[in-house]
Length: 224
Image: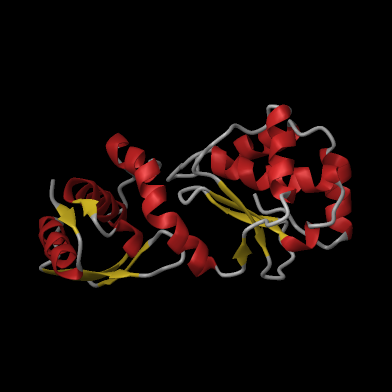
């Protein structure tokens, strides 16, 4: 098994795949973005990529498939990541390797030391709204924004605005559910149908209207 562990190996891989796609001068480096992404700048024959360092120490075949998919997208050809690649990005291995770094980079995400979020998750599981997931981390978001919360599907992190720490159970549970549901929908590179699926999941929460009214009164918005 060959792992792409440093910029030298990454650069060689991008140079090879880039040349196959018409770029005589192609290179890349790992970059510590907060979110998982790949950014590039290019001309007709030159391209440079900044690749999320969450992909460091990834099997060459997996990383190569991601790069090939991106080069096709740059050409304007709609294509999907191979099933094996999506499987890796959704795997316990990927989460275990990167989740702590994501939480640290996100800043303002903190553990619940009073068990409030844990109790909320128990209630949601009892209502069969969420499933148990050993990789899932539910945290407070203390960044002071007016969003109900934030989430990362790949990193399996759901965060709830810390201003809701003292909210009543219905409001808190809905806030937690709204973020956990995003994570448990799974990875969807194209985002096709995701908004519709998310709206249908929120509709399953009895008490949604009342909770949203309270959140609106607090000036908080729900990002879908």
